[in-house]
Structures are given as C-alpha cells and as structure tokens.
Length: 395
Image 1 (cartoon, one colour):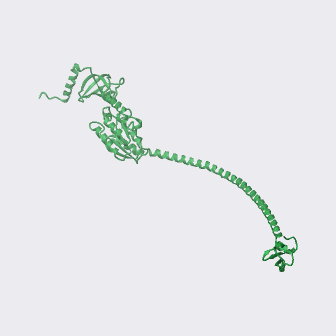
Image 2 (cartoon, one colour; image 1 turned 180 degrees about the horizontal axis):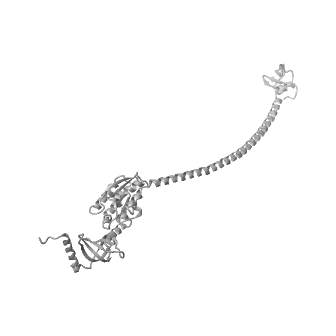
Image 3 (cartoon, one colour; image 1 turned 30 degrees about the horizontal axis):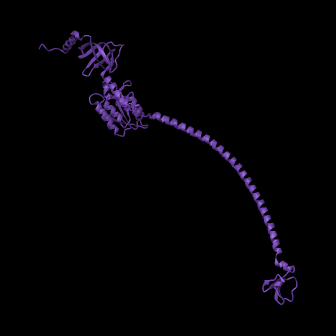
C-alpha cells in the first residue's frame, strides 16, 4: 500500500509543512504566560487565552526580558514540529509585554472587591491559640506537602495531632473539595486549619483565587493559615486567611511549638525565677531584720516611757491617797472630839444630871409646880423627888 509511511516520514512531512508555509513565519501571537521553566539554557513556557494554550520555547535564552506568571506578552516566532519527539511548539525569537494577563486582571479585580468588603482587615484576623494540640490540614493526600508538614511537626512537637482532609488542589473540582474540607474541619476540635499546596504556575494556583473560597475562609470559626505555593506567590486565600505562611513547611513550623527550645526557655526562666526569689528573700530578710531591731528599740523606749508614766502615776496616786487619808483622818478626829464633847455620859461625869417630869425632859422651872413628882437621872441611877419650892427667874 503506497500510503503506508513510517513515523519519521509522517513527522517530517508535518515539520516541512510548517517550514514551507511563509505566512507562519515570524507570526506575532499574544497571550498570558504560564508554566515558566528553564532547562539547558532554554526558556520553556505557554501562552494562553480563554480558548486555547500554545506551548512555547526560547532557545539559547541567557538574559533579557523574562516574563512573569500571569503576565500577557506578545511573542514573535514560528511554529515548529519536532520530528524526533513528535511535539509541536512555537519557537519564540522575540517577546515583549502586551497589556495585562487575563488571570492577573481577574486576580486584581477580585482583590479590590474583597478588600473593599473588608475581608483583608487586620482587626478581623483571628489570632492563633497559644497552645495548639490539633491541626487540620486541607491538601492533597499524595503530594509532598502533607509529608513535609508531618515530618516538621513530628520533629518539633511529636504530641501534635495532624488531621488531614484530602482535597484536590488544582483542576476541575479542586475549589469545591477545598471549601468542603474547611467546612468539615471547622466543625471538629482542631485548633487551627492549614490550607496548603506546593508551587505551580499562575493557572495551577488559580483555584485559590476564588471568591467562594475567600468567603468560606472569612466566615470560618477556626483560625486559618494559607500556605499556597512558594514565598513569592500570592493568592486571594493568602490575603483573606488569618495568617499567611510563605510555604507549607513554614506553616508547619508556625503551628508546632519546638519542644526542645521550649524546654530550654522553661529551664532558663525557672533559673531566673529562682534567682529573683533568692534576691527577693535576701533583700527582704535584711529589711525584716532591720524592722525587728527597730521594733525592739522602739518597744524598749515605749516600755520605759510608759513605765515612767506608770511610776509617776503611782507616786501621784500614793500622794493623793495619803493626802485624802490625812484630811479624812483629821476630819474624823474633829468629829470624834465634837461627838465626845456632846456625850451625855461625859456630862454626867462632870456632875450634870437630867430632870424628867412625866417622862419629859425639864429644861425650865416653869414646866413643874411645887408638889410635882420628878425624876432626876444621874450617871449611876435615878432619884425620885417631889418639888418643894421653886427659885429662879422662871416665868
């Protein structure tokens, strides 16, 4: 059969078509840059728009203009079909910036919108707990990211639990599984949630530039750390999350307390506390001893002072009592002498007597008449007499 040809013949035929077509030489094509990489001194990348992707190569690329991921460029070159490898590529001879890339433009528009809504405000960021015991991770279960997180946390803090929610991190359905992972872990007892993936092109990371994902991150109850791509990569998830880690490994270090370092700090703080207590005790013991001495001195002074006052009071009291006693004794003597002078027995001894008439004391001759019987009371008895006559000045 004449139409049977080898692979080499077929690929060479296609290659020659591109070479022979004059209209395809030095074509200017614009699109958004994606998947930049260097190999063997050559620059490999793709340019794309909403409908298609074109694989490009710039051979012998040493210096000059290097486009960025997501940037829109104008590439000048020719199509080529590589016979041996059976691959089509656009061989670029020159390139330059050409406006903004579509993905980058969409990224800026969404960033401005969410910033206006306040989703990036620092006062809305939830702080990480001081003690983290359980960490939820939303990432691929087969990639290197989860293994790096497990290795780092295990080395720094073996007590830390890692709860993985396996999710797609790029391609169709990735956004939905990441959102579902955040929502599910947010209902559990994890202390913090990490959403993570390794580096990639702007297109690979576009899943994390989703408005729906941003809203879920902002409304989560648990603190969320975004660890997407490399240190130079920024996504909408980074801006909305409570904390951005430059890499997944850095996120693991943020949540895993280094127990060795913590133990060293604890030992150092313990020694510092012991020294402070010793200094405090020594300082205050000296102060207390000084107070004791001062109190003893003041007590002795106060005791002597009060003792002198008491002694003075005692002397004054004794003097007062003696004075009162002497005054009262003198007064008693006067009363006794006066009473003694009024004692009727004493008067009887001096020869005085008491005359009674009808049991009444007679003090005047006018109280009796001649012939009345009277009684005269003496010291040793009574005399019963009759009035014989009356003499005197009685009235």
